[in-house]
Image (cartoon, rainbow, N blue to C red; front, side):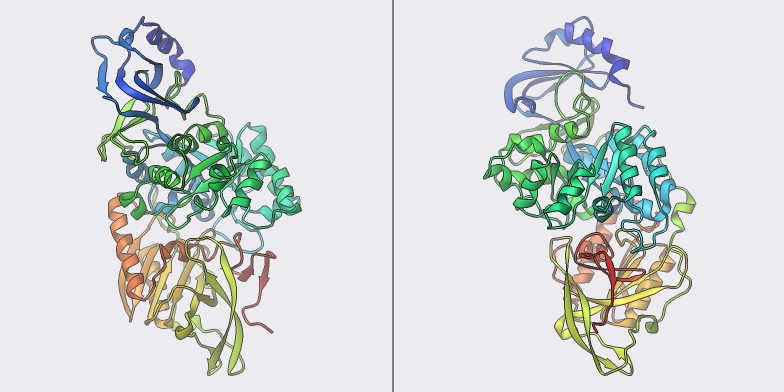
Length: 594
């Protein structure tokens, strides 16, 4: 366990006073002070026991014979970047491998909500994630998942969590608060269970994460805010951002692999002039390919700057704003005495090249190369035995029966680069009592295959937007948030082959084209995460994305769209193991219109 300030306070005071030598001194850099929004040239930073001891114009009094000197040479000394809301599992990696991937990009603190693994393995899975997080050389704070299932009554998950589990987890050392409260109808309607989870979190003095995925900013929104969530990342426009910060929430603007919500909301600061300290940058969901090629929080900061933010304000939104929100302003988020010595050296604030990264006073990455040793954390065997299908499937399992030669059906409409879907309608024909897809109009089939309790259940419906133009199918055991198996395809035999391949694989993603598996990503841990390094997973994921393109799909990050089609807390239309769900009314709806 990293020592507390109380453990080392006397040493920090002694170094700052010149009575004892620092472990490390950064010499002659430009101190980016996020408290005052200043760049202070030719300053020194002294570090002792993994924390900043002295920050000022001359640290020569802190230097002893064994002090390591790092010449900053006019480079900017920036606080380590913080991701205020994210899901490790979306990278398809373990905590350790995710940390390996992001440290070279300057991320030194992450606030992670493991509600994906919670829906598969319950409190046991959350504890495994929490314990692995504690072993990392950077700060990985865990939020206790609030909604497993995300919408009770509308889906069945592999495990359930409630107020008792939340109260228990609040005593764990690495728990920082409650994960995103996705069941916003429950909060609005005064659900005792949801309010009890929030109350247990607040009683522990910790932060309640929000998730208000609705455009309604009337009484329902106000009721949700009154229920206690302290932040939200589901806004998609300037009005959403303004409404949240006016009500005392922190607006978390996200740039993930598929979510591009910064540009549309940052105008609340750049044009409307609202106080930027109420805004936080985050990623939410980043897959391994994004991490390997494009970066992590450094990517978000660069993007925010490109959208018109002053670089210092963008850096505040990825450092001190995040730390303050979670009650950690005295611990992380700035280069000031007493805080953990998390720092980036960069030669330019706008393009933000990450030249050196310090985590807790140690050089953890330099020039894109990882330097820090990583823990050897092994997930147990039972966490890798979670694809529990009753049997192999056949093409007939995907038949949608109907009396008559045609029917008007509901269709899930995919929206590129956004989490919401559209509730569409289409007329399809029937042959021998079975409804047909309509490839010419981009209407193919989607199925949710139950994989937690081996019930043998298959829910069938229609989806549009992927653009598949050949016989193909894609299957994934990553299916937010219930994490059953989602299969989308234009050919039922290919759909069966894809599902059966993942059953044999023990979880993952695959693409089948013309009766052949052409790409596959093995995700044995809970059917969500690989037990391999990010670059290997990214290579497999790249082949998977290329395979989707080969089948006719042209969507940006189409896999992320695929993986969210069962997320029954984001409008408008989703699929679950109980059927189609209208997420504007939070009720089951029929596939075939009357």
